[in-house]
Image 1 (cartoon, rainbow, N blue to C red):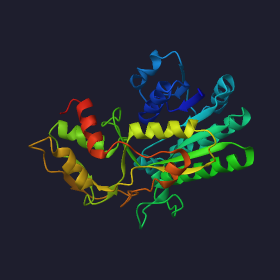
Image 2: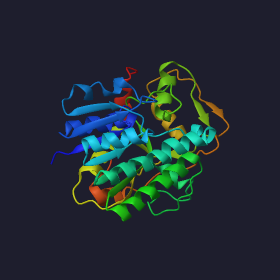
Image 3: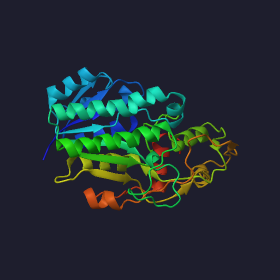
Image 4: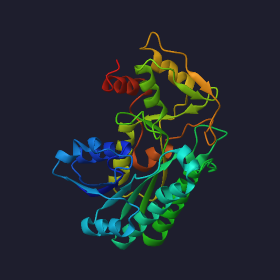
Length: 315
């Protein structure tokens, strides 16, 4: 069944890949973005597709966004627009509250008013804080260490309340560390992989905060886009949360060694003090995502890194 799906943050890193995936599957997509961090170039393929409509709009403009939802009456809203920087959420908590919580309320209220039956929400592993055990299950303790993680958790609770009171289906996708093409290494929002690759390509030392033994669960953006599409389109879904990850724990030191293999004269990384709000260990369980809508990651880190390096013209 082909659906009409509205994607906020459609020109962003995850948003543009999700948009491409949905269009490739034959769905009609309404993309919304204000280009604060997203790029029009990320939508190059989508803009040639007759099933894609783009609306340049800031989701914080509540009445304008609600009007767009009323005009197109989508079957699903995939809400990916956000402030995605933990350091910026600490430096500017008011902006974090606006972009990571209040916009979620705007999306939820627009969905309620115009009877949108499903919302897929970009949450984060940051809701867990620094867990004592991995892989992290969805029912593990949620003790976020940053305003970013707190806003994501508050948004989940708000959306699940709307689901309970108004009969919506809400899927909260707790992304772990997403990497892939279109992740801008020059941006403060970028993931460590794109930054490391950029530094290697320019024969510059990478910066590692702390001792480098902190771990992450790195997942390809192609897998994340597929997970979003499954959560948006799978029939008969109940509301809930799910980790979107690989169940594989990799330290930053291990990651650096993997990446530097193609660079015979890679400089030694520069270690600096760890940052406030950084998590020591992160690796999630995928059981609920698999049981709820059949998702498991398919792309290994090694394959994903080779593909990314090739697309960046580094290899």
